[in-house]
Amino acid sequence: MFKYYCEKLLKQLSIDYNCTPDDLRAKENIITTSKLNDGRRSYSPGMPFLQMVSAGGNTVIMADECLHEFLRGFVRDVEGHHLFELDNLLKLNDAIKPYGYEMNPTHHMFLPSRNVVAEERFTVKWLYDSEISQFYGNPHFPNAISYPEPCPVRPDRMVVVAVDGGDIMGMAGCSEDAPHWMQIGIDVLPEYRSRGIGAYLVTLLKNRIIEMGDIPFYGTASANVQSQNIALNSGFKPTWVETEAVKIDMN
Image (cartoon, rainbow, N blue to C red; front, side, top):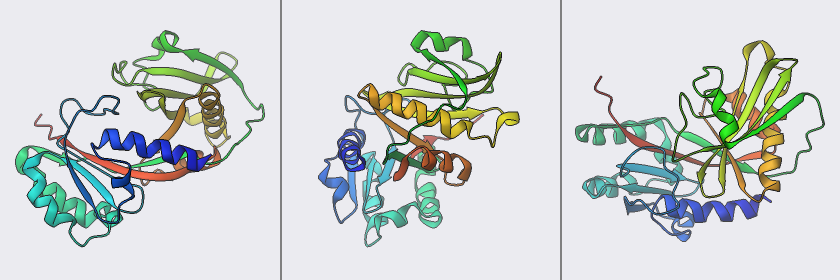
Protein backbone atom coordinates (compact mmCIF):
# COMPACT_ATOMS: atom_id res chain seq x y z
CA MET A 1 0.00 0.00 0.00
CA PHE A 2 2.59 2.57 1.08
CA LYS A 3 4.85 1.99 -1.93
CA TYR A 4 1.87 2.43 -4.27
CA TYR A 5 0.92 5.76 -2.72
CA CYS A 6 4.54 6.96 -2.71
CA GLU A 7 4.73 6.43 -6.47
CA LYS A 8 1.51 8.41 -6.87
CA LEU A 9 2.95 11.12 -4.63
CA LEU A 10 6.08 11.56 -6.73
CA LYS A 11 3.94 12.11 -9.80
CA GLN A 12 1.79 14.69 -8.01
CA LEU A 13 4.75 16.52 -6.50
CA SER A 14 6.41 16.68 -9.92
CA ILE A 15 3.33 18.60 -11.12
CA ASP A 16 3.28 20.83 -8.03
CA TYR A 17 7.01 21.62 -8.18
CA ASN A 18 7.54 21.72 -11.97
CA CYS A 19 10.06 18.90 -11.89
CA THR A 20 10.25 15.20 -12.71
CA PRO A 21 9.68 12.25 -10.37
CA ASP A 22 13.39 11.44 -10.73
CA ASP A 23 14.25 14.96 -9.47
CA LEU A 24 12.52 14.06 -6.20
CA ARG A 25 14.73 10.96 -5.86
CA ALA A 26 17.98 12.69 -6.85
CA LYS A 27 21.02 12.88 -4.57
CA GLU A 28 21.51 16.58 -5.18
CA ASN A 29 19.07 19.37 -4.40
CA ILE A 30 17.08 20.64 -7.38
CA ILE A 31 15.95 24.17 -8.24
CA THR A 32 13.12 24.71 -10.72
CA THR A 33 11.24 27.71 -12.10
CA SER A 34 7.80 28.57 -10.77
CA LYS A 35 4.97 27.41 -13.01
CA LEU A 36 1.23 26.85 -12.65
CA ASN A 37 0.94 23.33 -14.03
CA ASP A 38 -2.48 21.84 -14.66
CA GLY A 39 -3.47 19.41 -11.91
CA ARG A 40 -1.35 21.07 -9.23
CA ARG A 41 -2.30 21.54 -5.61
CA SER A 42 -2.81 25.25 -4.97
CA TYR A 43 -2.66 26.82 -1.50
CA SER A 44 -1.84 30.44 -2.33
CA PRO A 45 -3.22 32.72 -5.04
CA GLY A 46 -1.14 33.56 -8.10
CA MET A 47 2.24 32.31 -9.24
CA PRO A 48 4.22 30.70 -6.38
CA PHE A 49 7.23 32.79 -5.37
CA LEU A 50 8.95 29.90 -3.60
CA GLN A 51 7.92 26.40 -2.58
CA MET A 52 10.17 23.62 -1.25
CA VAL A 53 9.64 19.95 -0.59
CA SER A 54 11.59 16.99 0.74
CA ALA A 55 10.71 13.32 1.17
CA GLY A 56 13.70 12.88 3.46
CA GLY A 57 16.45 12.77 0.84
CA ASN A 58 17.12 15.77 -1.35
CA THR A 59 15.03 18.94 -1.51
CA VAL A 60 13.34 20.42 -4.57
CA ILE A 61 12.79 24.18 -4.56
CA MET A 62 10.51 25.81 -7.12
CA ALA A 63 11.05 29.56 -7.17
CA ASP A 64 10.92 32.76 -9.14
CA GLU A 65 14.03 33.12 -11.29
CA CYS A 66 15.11 36.20 -9.33
CA LEU A 67 15.98 33.85 -6.44
CA HIS A 68 17.88 31.21 -8.40
CA GLU A 69 21.37 32.65 -7.98
CA PHE A 70 20.92 32.89 -4.20
CA LEU A 71 19.35 29.43 -4.05
CA ARG A 72 22.20 27.76 -5.91
CA GLY A 73 24.53 28.87 -3.14
CA PHE A 74 21.96 28.19 -0.43
CA VAL A 75 21.55 24.49 -1.32
CA ARG A 76 25.17 23.76 -2.27
CA ASP A 77 26.76 21.02 -0.13
CA VAL A 78 23.74 20.86 2.21
CA GLU A 79 21.77 17.64 2.72
CA GLY A 80 18.21 18.23 1.60
CA HIS A 81 16.45 17.64 4.91
CA HIS A 82 18.77 20.13 6.65
CA LEU A 83 17.30 22.91 4.52
CA PHE A 84 14.15 22.64 6.66
CA GLU A 85 16.02 23.31 9.90
CA LEU A 86 15.45 26.66 11.60
CA ASP A 87 18.81 28.24 10.81
CA ASN A 88 18.37 27.61 7.10
CA LEU A 89 14.72 28.69 7.08
CA LEU A 90 15.78 31.95 8.72
CA LYS A 91 18.39 32.50 5.98
CA LEU A 92 15.71 31.85 3.39
CA ASN A 93 13.33 34.20 5.16
CA ASP A 94 15.93 37.00 5.13
CA ALA A 95 16.54 36.45 1.40
CA ILE A 96 12.89 36.79 0.39
CA LYS A 97 11.87 39.64 2.71
CA PRO A 98 13.11 42.36 0.31
CA TYR A 99 10.62 40.98 -2.24
CA GLY A 100 7.73 41.30 0.22
CA TYR A 101 7.53 37.63 1.20
CA GLU A 102 8.13 35.53 4.30
CA MET A 103 8.32 31.80 4.94
CA ASN A 104 5.29 29.88 6.14
CA PRO A 105 5.65 27.20 8.82
CA THR A 106 6.55 23.72 7.58
CA HIS A 107 3.79 21.21 6.80
CA HIS A 108 4.39 17.59 7.82
CA MET A 109 2.51 15.29 5.48
CA PHE A 110 1.29 11.69 5.78
CA LEU A 111 0.19 8.93 3.39
CA PRO A 112 -1.65 5.65 4.12
CA SER A 113 0.69 2.84 5.10
CA ARG A 114 -1.56 0.13 6.55
CA ASN A 115 -5.16 -0.97 6.77
CA VAL A 116 -6.99 -0.08 9.98
CA VAL A 117 -10.49 -1.39 10.65
CA ALA A 118 -12.69 1.11 12.50
CA GLU A 119 -14.89 -0.99 14.75
CA GLU A 120 -18.20 0.77 15.39
CA ARG A 121 -17.88 2.94 18.49
CA PHE A 122 -19.83 6.13 17.83
CA THR A 123 -22.92 7.15 15.91
CA VAL A 124 -21.89 8.94 12.71
CA LYS A 125 -23.48 10.81 9.82
CA TRP A 126 -22.03 11.26 6.33
CA LEU A 127 -22.44 14.45 4.29
CA TYR A 128 -21.28 15.17 0.74
CA ASP A 129 -20.55 18.26 -1.37
CA SER A 130 -23.40 20.79 -1.04
CA GLU A 131 -24.65 19.13 2.16
CA ILE A 132 -21.54 20.49 3.90
CA SER A 133 -22.49 24.15 3.33
CA GLN A 134 -24.50 24.35 6.57
CA PHE A 135 -21.23 24.26 8.55
CA TYR A 136 -19.30 27.03 6.78
CA GLY A 137 -18.40 29.81 9.18
CA ASN A 138 -18.72 27.54 12.22
CA PRO A 139 -15.62 28.20 14.36
CA HIS A 140 -15.69 24.65 15.77
CA PHE A 141 -14.56 23.12 12.45
CA PRO A 142 -11.63 25.15 11.03
CA ASN A 143 -9.62 22.03 10.12
CA ALA A 144 -12.27 19.59 8.93
CA ILE A 145 -13.66 21.98 6.29
CA SER A 146 -12.72 25.29 4.68
CA TYR A 147 -13.04 28.21 7.08
CA PRO A 148 -14.78 30.60 7.10
CA GLU A 149 -16.15 29.94 3.59
CA PRO A 150 -15.77 27.34 0.83
CA CYS A 151 -12.56 27.33 -1.22
CA PRO A 152 -13.21 26.95 -4.96
CA VAL A 153 -9.77 25.53 -5.76
CA ARG A 154 -9.92 22.97 -2.92
CA PRO A 155 -13.60 22.01 -2.63
CA ASP A 156 -14.79 20.08 0.39
CA ARG A 157 -16.07 16.71 -0.84
CA MET A 158 -17.12 14.69 2.18
CA VAL A 159 -17.43 14.84 5.97
CA VAL A 160 -18.17 12.28 8.63
CA VAL A 161 -19.65 13.59 11.88
CA ALA A 162 -19.75 11.84 15.24
CA VAL A 163 -22.92 12.72 17.14
CA ASP A 164 -24.13 12.35 20.72
CA GLY A 165 -27.89 12.61 20.39
CA GLY A 166 -28.37 15.99 18.73
CA ASP A 167 -24.87 17.25 19.58
CA ILE A 168 -21.81 17.05 17.34
CA MET A 169 -18.76 15.58 19.06
CA GLY A 170 -16.33 15.83 16.16
CA MET A 171 -15.99 16.10 12.40
CA ALA A 172 -13.48 14.78 9.87
CA GLY A 173 -13.62 16.18 6.35
CA CYS A 174 -11.67 15.99 3.11
CA SER A 175 -10.98 18.58 0.44
CA GLU A 176 -9.96 17.69 -3.10
CA ASP A 177 -6.67 19.57 -3.30
CA ALA A 178 -5.80 18.10 -6.70
CA PRO A 179 -7.72 15.64 -8.88
CA HIS A 180 -8.35 12.56 -6.69
CA TRP A 181 -6.09 13.84 -3.89
CA MET A 182 -8.21 14.20 -0.73
CA GLN A 183 -6.66 15.98 2.24
CA ILE A 184 -8.20 15.00 5.57
CA GLY A 185 -8.72 17.41 8.46
CA ILE A 186 -10.18 16.71 11.90
CA ASP A 187 -11.84 18.73 14.67
CA VAL A 188 -13.09 17.30 17.97
CA LEU A 189 -14.93 19.58 20.37
CA PRO A 190 -12.99 20.12 23.62
CA GLU A 191 -15.49 18.38 25.89
CA TYR A 192 -15.28 15.20 23.78
CA ARG A 193 -11.51 14.90 23.39
CA SER A 194 -9.35 11.98 24.63
CA ARG A 195 -12.04 9.45 23.76
CA GLY A 196 -10.57 8.25 20.46
CA ILE A 197 -13.11 10.16 18.36
CA GLY A 198 -10.47 11.82 16.19
CA ALA A 199 -8.73 8.62 15.15
CA TYR A 200 -12.07 6.88 14.67
CA LEU A 201 -13.41 9.53 12.29
CA VAL A 202 -10.14 9.90 10.37
CA THR A 203 -9.95 6.12 9.94
CA LEU A 204 -13.52 5.97 8.65
CA LEU A 205 -12.89 8.80 6.20
CA LYS A 206 -9.54 7.43 5.03
CA ASN A 207 -11.10 4.03 4.35
CA ARG A 208 -14.05 5.55 2.47
CA ILE A 209 -11.72 7.64 0.27
CA ILE A 210 -9.70 4.53 -0.61
CA GLU A 211 -12.91 2.60 -1.40
CA MET A 212 -13.85 5.39 -3.83
CA GLY A 213 -10.52 5.01 -5.64
CA ASP A 214 -9.07 8.32 -4.46
CA ILE A 215 -5.93 9.09 -2.45
CA PRO A 216 -6.23 10.24 1.18
CA PHE A 217 -3.47 12.31 2.74
CA TYR A 218 -3.04 14.15 6.02
CA GLY A 219 -1.04 17.19 7.05
CA THR A 220 -0.17 18.78 10.37
CA ALA A 221 2.25 21.14 12.09
CA SER A 222 5.57 19.91 13.43
CA ALA A 223 4.61 20.51 17.09
CA ASN A 224 1.03 19.20 16.89
CA VAL A 225 1.80 15.84 18.47
CA GLN A 226 -1.86 15.07 19.14
CA SER A 227 -2.71 15.46 15.45
CA GLN A 228 0.30 13.38 14.44
CA ASN A 229 -0.81 10.60 16.79
CA ILE A 230 -4.27 10.63 15.19
CA ALA A 231 -2.61 10.17 11.80
CA LEU A 232 -0.45 7.29 13.04
CA ASN A 233 -3.35 5.58 14.81
CA SER A 234 -5.43 5.86 11.64
CA GLY A 235 -2.86 4.03 9.51
CA PHE A 236 -0.92 6.97 8.06
CA LYS A 237 2.86 7.30 7.91
CA PRO A 238 4.98 10.49 7.73
CA THR A 239 6.11 10.81 4.12
CA TRP A 240 7.13 14.32 3.12
CA VAL A 241 7.65 17.89 4.36
CA GLU A 242 6.99 21.11 2.50
CA THR A 243 6.71 24.85 2.99
CA GLU A 244 6.23 27.95 0.89
CA ALA A 245 6.69 31.71 0.82
CA VAL A 246 3.65 33.91 1.41
CA LYS A 247 3.20 37.63 0.91
CA ILE A 248 3.85 39.71 4.01
CA ASP A 249 0.61 41.06 5.47
CA MET A 250 1.10 44.81 5.72
CA ASN A 251 -2.15 45.39 7.69
